[in-house]
Image 1 (cartoon, rainbow, N blue to C red):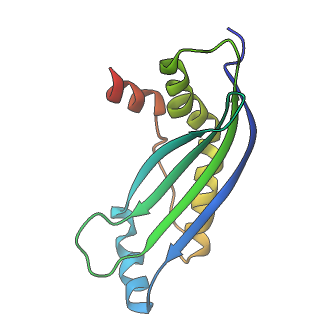
Image 2: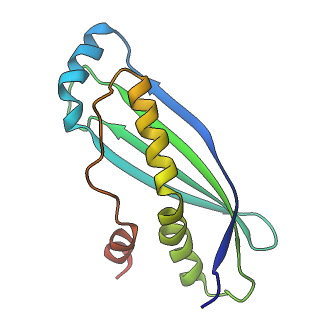
Length: 140
């Protein structure tokens, strides 16, 4: 099959790192391994089969700890869907799965840089996000 979409551009729309004080920093440094990654994907059709895909990735403490740091990147990708593709289900899979697989290494590198530059240099993500599996769990 020919290309289903083309990436016209990608950029970081917003990036945030919040560690309110030194006590929080010291607490988080010891507990950051318990932080979890969450991903939210939205899309906005523009014109001529061009779509803005926004991927928000958060790395945060989901426990009820008082001392927390917060890390978030909002990453925008502009894609053009091939004219032959009309089926909304195929476009949905392109946005939620194919585009994400294409851009994830950029997002992961940006998030790791944010974490390292925020004072947490030892962070690594051992498991890669499997967008195909997440898509199939949600829609099949």
